[in-house]
Image (cartoon, rainbow, N blue to C red):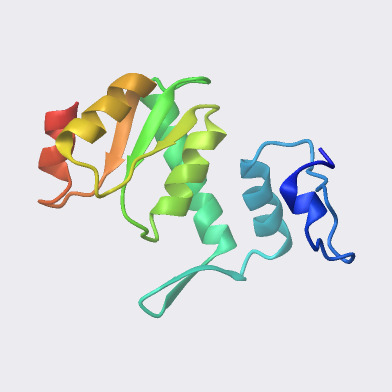
Length: 141
């Protein structure tokens, strides 16, 4: 690993070359932050802040919804959305079920989206109820 280009070139002595990650699922980061700083802002959209507690609550509700619809560990659930406040709770909600979040580029064509959804074996898709996204999603699935 030390022979990698980024290790040879001017690596700052104050920056570690490796990172230590906690041995816990990614969604635990949200849960831990929400427990320690529930009222701290997590997202800001058009001047409206949502707290970590709010995002965690939404993620928990999304996870429960997905489980009630039969989504289970290892299933793939797509997110076909632009960067919106709904994105983080959907992403973490999917992870909380044990499913895999398949992120789709909102500028995909129908053929590109169809390929990604088919190739990944997606069982559900989160998309906007918007004329730019909904018809494309229905055609792709």
